[in-house]
Length: 94
Image (cartoon, rainbow, N blue to C red; front, side):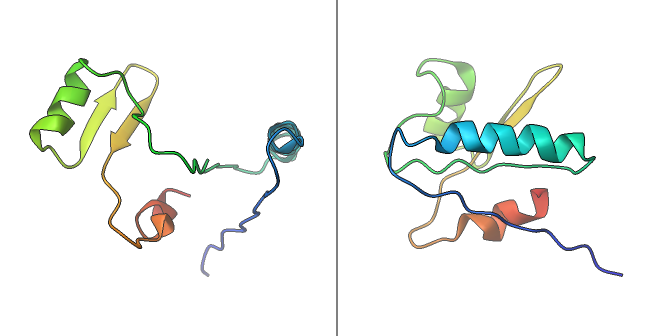
């Protein structure tokens, strides 16, 4: 039997309580024993890590993907292609 992922989009203007609602939903759904993942969209282009750090320098040199792994977390950085749907690559993580 297949596994189905339910997707909920929370959309609204800035400062209208989206983050508060999302945090409350995460807590409640986790309380019910569900796995919850989030994807935060930013309409602004900005660096996700600090310039000068090794992982930043790896990306600047052309590494694709570039990853950072700590004892308790990991992050993978990869560029988006024009018109790409992020779920095409990120979907399997959810």
